[in-house]
Length: 442
Image (tube, rainbow, N blue to C red):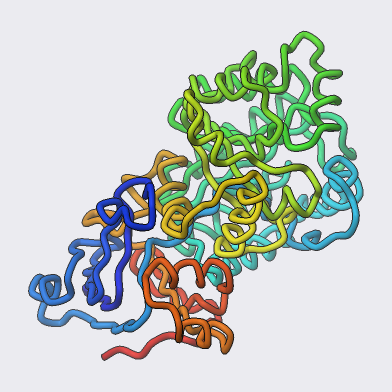
């Protein structure tokens, strides 16, 4: 396979950056090179050094003066909700019943699922996201559609058929046994096929009976290498309803504990209103709390206490996500902009290096796949985003006074969106996706 040599300003993280001056936390090259071969990064560093390792016939692409970073990672999104994003005026439970569940009934139609999966993944890539942890609908066909589209693009994605057998319309219900059987079949067909990862996906305790959560726990025991994803502690009414349905539970988190659903590959969306006991339980098991700021603000759910969760004695593992369609934007740049504001409302600040760590290496660590994605390290999969901090007139004007890399990153986070994404590489392949802004080879 022909090698590709990318040139540009490269930035990749080694660990959490404590401050904007914590230079040992990242690797930055003002004139960097990335040598790509067979979908992997085979050399990274100063361009002059990397160029020496390239084959004679290497394809060279010069992205200067733009920034090259690992592709963004979205740890929680609902692909069937593309046509309910920006729906007006409801809190969580009403929003689900009014908009989401009726929309998801459409996904029993395989052609509809394939169309929306295609558009969803196009939108992810257009916004610089190369990996997403996605919820499908309750229908097996929706997961098949998602994985087929993901596999066609050679993307590394995590997804699963939603399990839900109560408290929703008939058209989006399964049974404990059918949820188990469909999940087993999908795991056999798709997990490990190419770059696909399956996630056991009970929607949340309200829509799963005890019998179904038993089945979800059984799947986790039978497939300990799989992810598990669900929702936790998003909204006060949701918490109260859950405890009515599970009166034996000490708290909401205890519901999932009782069925063996906590663990290092367990992703819990939202986690806004956790008690100290619940936070300890998540920490003790290495479970992941997923921060969804645009959704939390849009639905009026509350403020995720990012810095306290991160620095408490029993710290939580944290990921960040769009939560489309409760979330209001497909962009992880926009997500971290709103995240910055939510964190500020809790009296803390997130510096721009921390934000970009979170949406690259931080999310890869939270998803337990940092050995594959989230960095520009040699051997990593070649998932790369190219960012232009001068993409709009307002950004160009502000960049006239930006003197540091930290200022440039914060500008990208605050003013950037899909227009700032000049190119995206998935497993080393340029994904045009109608960007129309690809840089010519030099």
